[in-house]
Amino acid sequence: MKWQQVRELFPDQFVLLSILDYVEEEDRKIVTEVAPIRAIPEQDANREFFSAKPGNIVYHTSNEECVIRLRKDPMLRVRRGS
Image 1 (cartoon, one colour):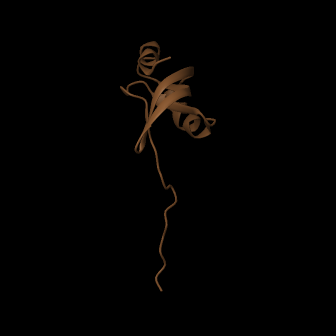
Image 2 (cartoon, rainbow, N blue to C red):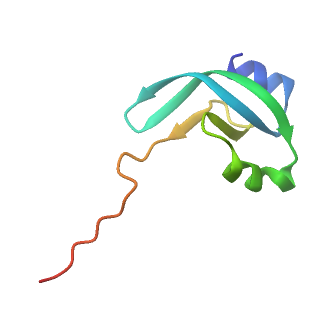
Protein backbone atom coordinates (compact mmCIF):
# COMPACT_ATOMS: atom_id res chain seq x y z
CA MET A 1 0.00 0.00 0.00
CA LYS A 2 1.24 3.49 -0.80
CA TRP A 3 1.71 6.06 1.97
CA GLN A 4 -1.02 8.29 0.54
CA GLN A 5 -3.52 5.42 0.87
CA VAL A 6 -2.53 4.92 4.52
CA ARG A 7 -3.05 8.65 5.13
CA GLU A 8 -6.57 8.40 3.70
CA LEU A 9 -7.47 5.29 5.73
CA PHE A 10 -6.00 6.60 9.02
CA PRO A 11 -6.34 10.40 8.92
CA ASP A 12 -4.37 12.39 11.50
CA GLN A 13 -3.20 9.50 13.68
CA PHE A 14 -0.22 7.35 14.53
CA VAL A 15 0.01 4.05 12.68
CA LEU A 16 2.23 1.01 13.18
CA LEU A 17 3.59 0.09 9.75
CA SER A 18 5.57 -2.73 8.24
CA ILE A 19 8.02 -1.34 5.66
CA LEU A 20 7.78 -3.32 2.42
CA ASP A 21 9.86 -1.13 0.09
CA TYR A 22 11.91 2.05 0.21
CA VAL A 23 14.40 4.18 -1.71
CA GLU A 24 17.58 5.37 0.01
CA GLU A 25 18.84 8.86 -0.85
CA GLU A 26 21.89 10.20 1.01
CA ASP A 27 20.77 10.41 4.65
CA ARG A 28 17.10 9.54 4.03
CA LYS A 29 15.09 6.38 3.58
CA ILE A 30 11.95 7.26 1.61
CA VAL A 31 9.36 4.60 2.29
CA THR A 32 7.39 3.78 -0.87
CA GLU A 33 5.36 0.72 0.13
CA VAL A 34 3.96 -0.23 3.54
CA ALA A 35 1.53 -2.62 5.19
CA PRO A 36 -0.43 -0.90 7.96
CA ILE A 37 -0.66 -3.09 11.05
CA ARG A 38 -2.88 -0.94 13.28
CA ALA A 39 -3.63 2.55 14.49
CA ILE A 40 -1.84 3.61 17.69
CA PRO A 41 -3.51 5.83 20.30
CA GLU A 42 -1.54 9.04 20.77
CA GLN A 43 -0.79 8.30 24.43
CA ASP A 44 0.85 4.97 23.42
CA ALA A 45 2.83 6.23 20.41
CA ASN A 46 6.14 6.78 22.22
CA ARG A 47 6.11 3.33 23.85
CA GLU A 48 5.12 1.64 20.59
CA PHE A 49 7.81 3.57 18.68
CA PHE A 50 10.59 2.25 20.91
CA SER A 51 9.24 -1.30 21.05
CA ALA A 52 8.61 -1.71 17.30
CA LYS A 53 10.21 -4.79 15.77
CA PRO A 54 12.87 -4.43 13.05
CA GLY A 55 11.20 -3.51 9.76
CA ASN A 56 8.30 -1.80 11.53
CA ILE A 57 7.85 1.87 12.40
CA VAL A 58 5.32 4.12 14.08
CA TYR A 59 4.58 7.17 11.94
CA HIS A 60 1.98 9.94 11.98
CA THR A 61 -0.26 10.36 8.95
CA SER A 62 -0.10 14.15 9.08
CA ASN A 63 3.27 13.80 7.30
CA GLU A 64 3.00 14.07 3.52
CA GLU A 65 5.85 11.60 3.00
CA CYS A 66 7.05 8.67 5.05
CA VAL A 67 10.74 9.50 5.45
CA ILE A 68 13.27 8.12 7.91
CA ARG A 69 16.43 10.11 8.59
CA LEU A 70 19.47 7.84 8.61
CA ARG A 71 22.52 8.18 10.79
CA LYS A 72 25.54 6.99 8.86
CA ASP A 73 27.76 6.96 11.95
CA PRO A 74 25.59 6.73 15.07
CA MET A 75 28.61 6.40 17.35
CA LEU A 76 29.94 9.66 18.74
CA ARG A 77 33.69 9.52 18.62
CA VAL A 78 35.49 11.53 21.22
CA ARG A 79 39.18 12.19 20.82
CA ARG A 80 41.06 12.27 24.08
CA GLY A 81 43.77 14.85 24.57
CA SER A 82 47.39 13.73 24.96
